[in-house]
Image 1 (cartoon, helix red, strand yellow):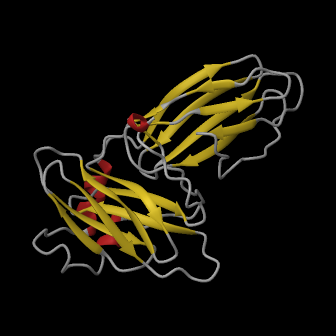
Image 2: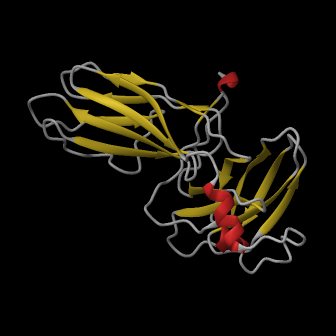
Length: 240
């Protein structure tokens, strides 16, 4: 199990598998896939959201949830005190991209979001409230997905990471794309992992890049990579 790579989260919608495949018949030659077929296949996938670890403290209750399609972890924090609180919430000692400073009234709930890449991960979540002992929990993120992408580096000209075929029996033809850039293909043998680079050209002031990873069988996973945090790459637990 590895610790999660911290990525940037925003509310911008990701492109669909059908859009990723659109205009790329040459890349998917021989697959005979049509958008309607893709949509049907996606609908049969396992649920994308998983309820993970939960913990109750004196000041707050915390419930965590993983979105396996957009690779996002949510911490749902409910105020149990009689006063207004502003929790300090961190994921692997990093501040969330959404909800880093929120005031929560008694009985109300706030949401904190952390994006990640990879699979079979552990994230240390800490919720600290003044005068109360911090509440700590470590949800394990494991999603059922045919391919996994783990970011290892990013710049204003490329996103680099490891692409893994999670099937030990079936080869995968994988389509990759950064933003609206060129669609690239990778052919992975069963169980194969490969370091890939996806070049793109950032526009002036761009701080994040959207990555879509799809297969010709209809799967799609989405990521948003922070281009400003070169030091946020997480190491495998075995490295500690």
